[in-house]
Structures are given as structure tokens and as C-alpha cells.
Length: 398
Ligand SMILES: *Cc1c(COP(=O)(O)O)cnc(C)c1O
Image (cartoon, rainbow, N blue to C red; front, side, top):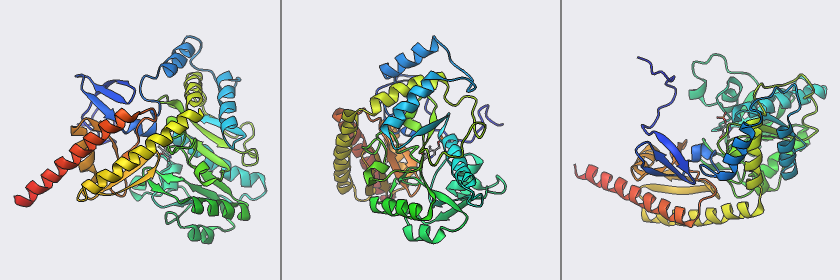
């Protein structure tokens, strides 16, 4: 018999009741160290007092307003995001996929408004993840996510990950832009070299096409910069963001330059809940905290320390760990055993992580962790590796 909740997830049998900082507590009171953070969402940890205050204060005023009126929270948050980035304008959504949908529509409309309606195609990378709507599964190109859902939406051309030459070769009269993650998350913490991103920016400029950087997972400090593209010293034309933006409250945004947004006039796009006052209040508080230079400095310093400790762990457990990669607090452990085995062994140690493609275990801790949490994580990682080694030894004997 089908479960009351549509069974589209293979869920771990864990029921969490509350959270505090980087910890989650199950209904029976067991404490878990959360290095998954709701998949890079709870960047400020659980129950942050500033976010609770922002949410409850707004809850007493008004929850929902139609976008047929001005929404002060939107204007305030848009200004915060514009001041902190390349962008001139922002569209608010409820999720990452919707932010991508806005970005894809905007890229097509940009060329339509410029008299080139035939420029509809976006070049994407293999291994990409952009969401689960019909357009974003077509953009991601993952056969598993497309299977059975009818004809894939046209307008996406995939090239091998990081292959700048292939992008150059793929650019043609139908190309609207390039859509990539500066660092692939679901794809297995695959880092695009800074030089490659700079070359892609140049190719886009030369061809008069748009660069869309999906920073839904990399955004808001996770890579040690407010946005990952800052590491390469380039800026996109359009940037969908979400995940950490609301610190756990569902909200996304599509940021753009004035030029890229030229086609998006009144009536071209909309969302009932997008830019909802509750979301704006929480995201406003979250962005205020995440844009502080000291916050980003803290992320970089924790990132360096965690990377060093993980390199040592890899040396100590060469039959379990293949390599460690990533940026700051967006790290991946490529395992020699199935990655699910390490995720499970860590769960037995009461530490939460997330799997990714390419047999990688993702470490995406809340960005507010301190050294005590790093030490706790390393103890649990060490124990999990030892448990897997013991399991392998037993298997060898048997
Ligand atoms: C999570 C994610 C998305 C989709 O966000 P949803 O809120 O799940 O729709 C898109 N792009 C990237 C890079 C992501 O990590």
C-alpha cells in the first residue's frame, strides 16, 4: 500500500524534533552533529535567535501579500542583495528550481527583446543539478531524473564538465547563454577551476550571450566568499540563489544585471508566494548576518582547518578514503567503499552527512561551527572509518 506521503524519497528512519546550532535532536533526545545542514540550507545553524525574532515579529504583522502591491520586505532585501553583489535587480521565488526557471526565462527573453528570438539554447555541464521541475531536469540532463516524464524540454545542450573548448564549439546562432554551477554540489563536489570560469566569461562576452551561474548551493558564504564566482574574479549576468538565503525558511531569488533583465517587463513573470513577507523578514536577517566580513573570514578559517584535518584522515584510512576536495565548508570525501556505507557509519556515530554523485560524501556543516565541532566531527569520522575497516577485515576472513 502506498505511504500517505508520496514515496519519492528513500528516507532514513530518523525523526528529528528540534535543532540547536549545528545539532539536531531526535524525538527520543539523541543528539546528532549535522554536517548536512538540510543540504546547505541551515547555514546559520538551527534556532538562530535573530532569525526566530525576525520570523515572529513579522508573523504578528502580516504573513502574505499579493505581488500586485509593493512589499517593503522585498524592496529591503533586494537592496541588501544588490549592495552585496554584481546585481541590479532581483526576482523572489520560493525555491531554487523556481529561481532557475526565472533565470532560464530571462535568458530567452533577453535575446527576444534584442531581436534574436532564435537564441533559446543554454549550454550546461554534464553532472549538473538545477532542480526537479521539467525545465530544470532538462537543464541537468540526468537520465535518471528525466526517465518517464515525457519529452525533455528543448533548449539545453550538454558538454563534459569543465570542458571550455567544448563550450566554445557548442556556441552557435541558437545559443542564449551558458548555465553552470561554479562548483557542482549534487554532481560530487566538483570544482570548476577559476581559470576555466574566467575563460567561459570571456567566451560569453565575445559571443554576446549570457553567463548564468547557479549559486543555489554555493551561495552565501559556503565557499568562503559570499558567492563562489568571487573566487575567480568574474561576475555572472544572471544568478539563481536559494538554499542558505532563508536560513531554513523556503525562499529563492534570481539576481540579474539591468542589461540581462531587459525583457522582463510587467506581466512577463510572476509567483503568488514569491517574496512573501515572512520569507523576506527571515532572509533579510540571514543575509545581514552572512554578508558580514567577519562571518566570511570565520568560514574560510574553519574551511582551512577542516580540509587539513580531512587530509590527515585520508592518510590514516587509505582503504576507505580516496581523496578530499571542495572549497571552505563545501567539501567532498570521495570514498573507496560505496559512499552510502560511510554516510551510514557516520549516522551510527550520530553525525549527519549527505551523499553525492561520483561516490562522494558531502560535508556541508552550518557555517557557524567552531573548532569544538570540527574536533567532534573528526572523532566521529575517525570512528566511522575504523568501523568500515573492521567490517572489511571481517569480510576478508569470512
Ligand atoms: C538544490 C539545488 C537546486 C534546486 O533547489 P530546490 O530548492 O530544491 O528547487 C538548484 N541548483 C542547485 C545547484 C542546487 O544545489
